[in-house]
Length: 391
Image 1 (cartoon, rainbow, N blue to C red):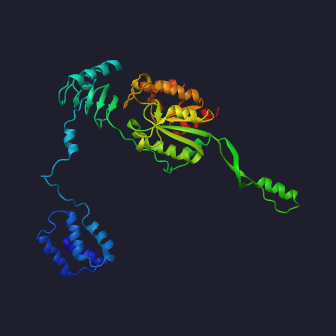
Image 2 (spheres, helix red, strand yellow; image 1 turned 60 degrees about the horizontal axis):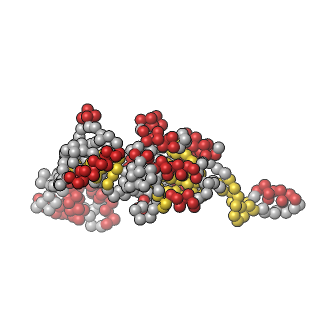
Image 3 (cartoon, rainbow, N blue to C red; image 1 turned 180 degrees about the vertical axis):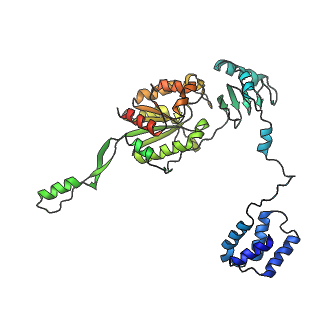
């Protein structure tokens, strides 16, 4: 292997001498590089390459000769903490999950949590009652319960928590994503109301021809204000949680809307609309915008598009304090009605395929609040939603 490596370097015009190759072999015999492929790479490069102009050729030959060779793992290396944590998680079969019952309602859940907080004295793991990890208790993390309160970071992925006690960080959607096709933009263009306002910046070709003809053939340029889409749009985007599965399509929609609508304001929310929204997820804990302020700032000529999977606990929509991550003084459905009363032209775009909507209670509740103006986040769905807004 080493001989063929040396010969291929020479064939690639890397001027490595026989003496340098023997020096490399001596270093390997003295275990300078031991059994690490990265250490051998740097040793060989330092030994055989005398001019940086030949580094690229050396890398190509090295990659060809030693492709697939990896450094063996150290059996005494410590296991990653994440691996050890996974060992403590409890995995249940579908039959075992069916045997785990919910406590029976929002009030019962919150009352039981108050009792557990008052009674529990220490850490607990693997049980069905106390606040802990890896069990079937309604309180804790890394376990399973059909209706519980997650206390602590990162769930096991069941997505059945009705409330989360943890500081959660969300990401803004990227409005610079370039679409592979222009299909979403074309669908959004149904929502167009063109107007000419402002300074005269654009050539009026028909007017110029007409004026020049009236001027005995002498050129008479006519200018008009630039033509643009006069629709004013408020875009509300659900971020975080289950919406992480739909980031790509939401970014494509956001990017397309940025390009199509001059008068566009966007806001973020999580799961259901409450008393506040935000524009920057990185600062959402310190820079909240009151929804009442939004209603006062933007008049009824604005159209509203809400984007979200509407997949949440029903308590988040119908209960005070039902928000999954904070205490809301008024239920989400009340804030939804206020928004829809203020902006009659409103639609909801849902990235969940339409055929699955009937299997989620909260989607049905949001759909009723929207008076059936919920559409799938597909090209056909966007097209239908834009038609609804133009009626």
